[in-house]
Structures are given as structure tokens and as C-alpha cells.
Length: 233
Image (cartoon, rainbow, N blue to C red; front, side):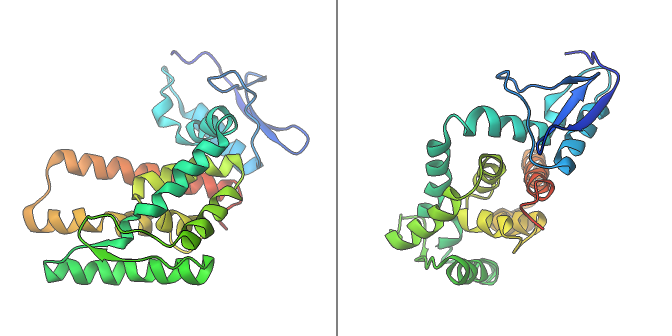
């Protein structure tokens, strides 16, 4: 789509905020009003729209995409989204460890054990750990504790939280980002630990490098969305 507007502004609408193109409020792809929780988020989305040149490229507007997803998908399928996020706790990345080589075993322990200690101390969720990829059952009370944290979030928070969780393959890591316990960059390094180890040993191919770059940028955008929304301080 070609750029059809000249001026982009962020406006207060009685406690919620909107982005206007030439004085007209933006709507989501599903034609819902784009109501945002903070001025900071509205201004950042306005900057994304203003940065578009001759063509409007949605992929270059990750904050707008996250807000639209929250409004169009989460508000209409809230329970489904909560269940999809919470399900990662049952097969969380940080619970499945390598048996060898020793260098990877040590790296996983150094990076992932603190995550497990944090989620137990912060949310009362003590998770089981195993070697290999065979499924290990987690205590129902631990899964329930983490699910309750997810279910307590507002719709506008669940969209970026879903993205972080799926990118990391870990509910534990995404909850740590949500709590401000780890940064987006730290979450990326923790979740990509296995692949980083492989790349150091065998070398990197172009496709893997591109995927990691895209994932890191997407994770950072989701964390920034949470910061601009006032969730992460």
C-alpha cells in the first residue's frame, strides 16, 4: 500500500491514546479502534507510521502489529491465548538438558539454573529437570502458579508476552522478561544457548544467522512494547 497521509499525531482520548493520520484515527486490520494504554506507546507507534516512506510496510511496524494483534486476536480469544502461552510451561526449554558435551552441560546449568531458581522464588513454581528430550511431567501446582501469572495480564500485555514465549520456547524466560528480571538481549542469549554452542563448534550458515537476527529484533520489539506500556519499568 502506498503512503496516503502527510501528518501523524498521537492524541489523548480520555485516558486512552490514539494515533491519527491527517486527523483520522487509525483502526486495526479488523476495523477496531486503536486504543492504546499510554502516550509513550502511542507516540512510538506514530513514529513507526511517520517513518514509512512511499510504501507502507507492516513488517517495519512491530509495535503497531503487536497492538493490532492484542485488539483483534487477544480480546476475541483471550482464554485460548492464555492457554497457548501457559502450555509452554509443560515443556519449557530450561527443563531439558544435554547429557554431553560437558561444555554445553555446564553452559546450560550456568544460564538455566538461575532461571529455575528465580521462577520458584518469584512465583512458587518448582519445575522438574531432565536430560534428553523425553517429556517430563511438571507438578500441577507449578503449572497452575505460572498460568495464574499469565491469566492476570491485560490483553495488551498478552500479545507481546505470547511472542516472547514462543520465540524463547520458554514460559519461564518470558515471565522473567515481563518481570524485568532479564532484558530482551539476555533472554535471547539464554534461549539461543544451544544453537550458539553448535554455531561455535560447526560454524554458522547464512539462514541460521538471518533467523537469529530476526528473532532477536522481534523479541526486542516485544519487550519495548511492554516497556512503553508501563509493564516493564
